[in-house]
Image (tube, rainbow, N blue to C red):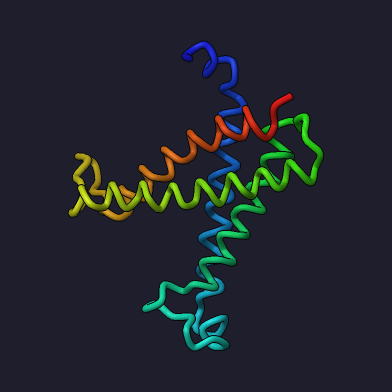
Amino acid sequence: MIASIKKHKKQIALFFIAGTLSAMIEVSLMKFFSLPQMLPHIFSFENKTNAYPLSNLLSTGGGILSNYFFSIRYVFTRGKHSKKKEFSLFIILSVTTMFMSLGIFAIFNSFIHEPVNLYFFTVGDIVLCKALAIFLVSLINYVAKKKIIFSN
């Protein structure tokens, strides 16, 4: 496994960068759509109490689409599938791992109830749970995309 990581370290680094950029796009879209003058102004149910459902859906969609673009452009080479099938598989995998991330977050959140002191700084419990969930799901995403979607 270590030899495989060394062999693909450039691709893994590019995957990490693509994921980081996609996450930044997703968070920015969430912030934009949830502004009081945007979707909450149009839809009464679009509010903090309801966890901004449309903003969350649209921003997640933007994150998935940007990640697809970055993945095919900079990380992976096209595989054996047609573009249509490749895109469909990518979306199915992304939605599946999104639900996995929510579940993993809930599991960590049930055990971690207070901020964690890491000597140099303190990490909030929710931030730590989200970061751990993202990390684990990213590992699954990389392997699944490489072996299933973009395989030759």
